[in-house]
Length: 285
Ligand code: SAM
Image (tube, rainbow, N blue to C red; front, side, top):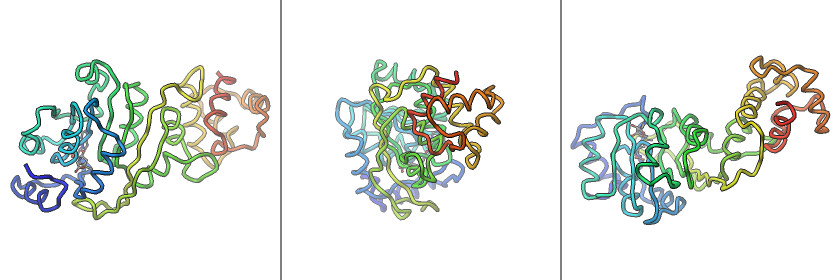
């Protein structure tokens, strides 16, 4: 089977199967071999690696992964793509295709079955409409991971990697940075895909921390607090947290905690670092 990263080969496969793109599945297939090589290099795929690919499409990146990894498990929701994948990946005996919704797959079980529970690498050109639930699901379910190297919308990549005091800083930045070190590996323009997406894209690598850089007594409570702080971004942290009924925190208690941390009562959530959110959560718990 010819390399699919080359546009002509992709078009031939699409025509052969009369494939109709489904917008609802975020289908924008990669047709740029340089970008594919860059993703492989960033993910540092070797014959030791078991890789989980989310949304293989017609198998373009899967071919690259199958050449380099020990084992590839590719989860694709669109049943119309399954016969195509069986064709384009027929020469690889280290690829398993699963026809399912990644948000419904028990990835911990998959890692247990395919890699004896040892950490896997996630590599994907993600369906953009579910980027956040996919990434957060992997972290919150404590899937054993080495790294996540994924194509996402450029704006989301920016939100993931920024720190306090910037307009993009928010709950997603803090959540990802709690679990991993983010780096943007490449910016990718719309003409590297078929069909072209209406937004710019970027490849981001999240290298999972071996031990969390921040310790907190109750992770869940801290993240509920962070969500509350950014739900009402323009409000002070004091008002944001006291307005969030589910936290059950009085204004007085929050004011005392801020005071203990030498933070003014007028401070906004977007000014706090992850370490400060963790310390505040430990005081307020
Ligand atoms: N990897 C291919 C490529 O780079 O050419 C396709 C990438 S395309 C951006 C996203 C892929 O994810 C599509 O094949 C789409 O059908 C699939 N997809 C969308 N939602 C999904 C879900 N919930 N679970 C698994 N796959 C999904």
